[in-house]
Length: 77
Image (cartoon, rainbow, N blue to C red; front, side):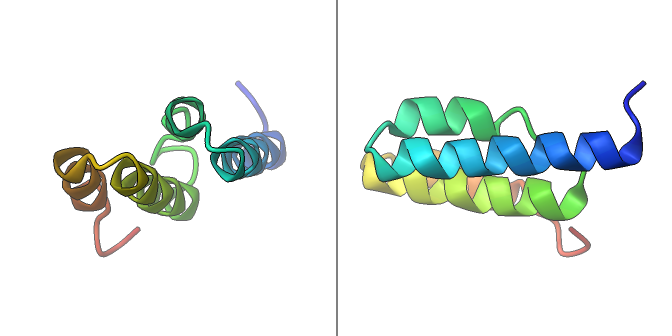
């Protein structure tokens, strides 16, 4: 089991990797990276990743995917 600090660094790395990919227009790859962030690992990181997934789906014209990603976020996240 990873230490909490190591896990938080991994979540941050995935989040940032996704941002780089999205900035290059590689939305599918960014979405795949952000999907690695689980709520159990970091509820805040998960919420931020799901928000970015929604934005990436929007950029692709995938409104259903966008809405689904936003619905994954809970108020307590």
